[in-house]
Image (cartoon, rainbow, N blue to C red; front, side, top):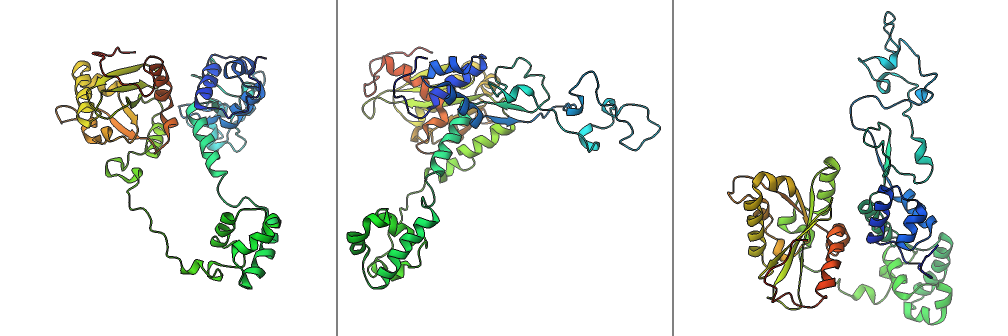
Length: 386
């Protein structure tokens, strides 16, 4: 297989998008691996680890394991207690098997126990009533980053190593020695940095406390920054990324548009405003004279005028963007030009979390093929719609 030599890097959002596309096209793990330059086992592990379960929420009864064999289906009667009824319980319209039958077990799809382990490329997916597993590049990338963050939390030591460190540090600190003095002679035995030792003492891991450190109790507590977090800005309340996730969980078929600005190399120059439709990856590009709220609102007004309010609401049902100052007028973007209706709902990504609008960021790579990063977009009288 033609894999890149020494390619030991983690999967990126772009890789995961290619994996999802391959699964949707029913490609084999080997074919997908050639596209993302990884080993097929890497693709297999990624799909099994980061696929999400979707339960059947429609009408009707999910098939029971007892009916798996079509030649001898379940023939139980009178579960409801009506002895005069001559119907087989599974054919009854008054009750569902899951409500009244203690022996009921929802049927599991056999295809999920073998490659590709998900329902992405299955032709029967639309009408299937069984529990489904789906691989989504967005969901998989979010899970990866959450695991990456949580794996760095807590104490990365075994109970034995903590006890060994405690046996060295506690008696010496109680004798009046400083951490620096102790590390001058016992650094290799302790097996961690001085900064880590201070953190462990502060967290109460050892028998000694901060008060046992002569100089630390004299230090004033560092002043915390008074800056308001981007998550807590007034216009973002109820419209953060976690609120966006709750919304699409309830309405997974909602039309989502990712919005962003492509900047030049200096302030006050023209910028590009982009709208990327997540479902189709279609991108609309508009040239703005300045990177301001007024310029952004003017594009919204123009789009609503050309499309009509109803079509605009249908196409731009949800807009996901970052916390740039040009997007701070959420009410203005959401409100219709006549001020009587809401034309869209705007949500904001978390700070420094560009992968949360990955379709938009990926499409911006194509813009950079034409306009290199750092170059100005001044001088272009018009910008085509891509």
